[in-house]
Amino acid sequence: MEITSENSMSLLFCFISSCFLVFITARFRRGSRLTVTLPPGPPRLPFIGNIHQVGKNPHRSFADLSKTYGPVMSLNLGSLKSVVITSPEAAREVLRTHDQILSARKSTDSIRSVGHHEVSVIWLPASSARWRYN
Image (tube, rainbow, N blue to C red; front, side):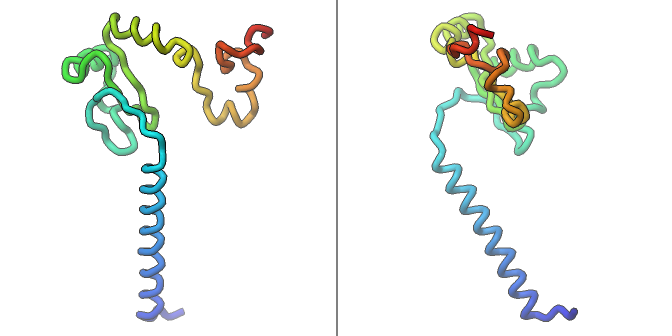
């Protein structure tokens, strides 16, 4: 099979069109999400987020970061957005005001795929009636 300039031009056009479509779709999806205001945090790297800043001693890394960003900061640990609280006063306030949200565990896709999130005590929310019977 011989590659002609006409074939290569149509192939290039298809490639550029595909890239453009992916870019526009990603941009549209990002703009349509509900925006949540997170506390300030350090700049992140693509894909790994702030994992490189955590190090071997996370408690020391968080203490150092809190000197710059305050006692409540947001970090991206891979694809997981996290809010880190480094002072006892801020922790008391957050636990007092957001206790129901923080008492639930996030179930992973693998747990949801086999249906364990519906029956296992570990994954049930504290407000669930099923939790009291298990």
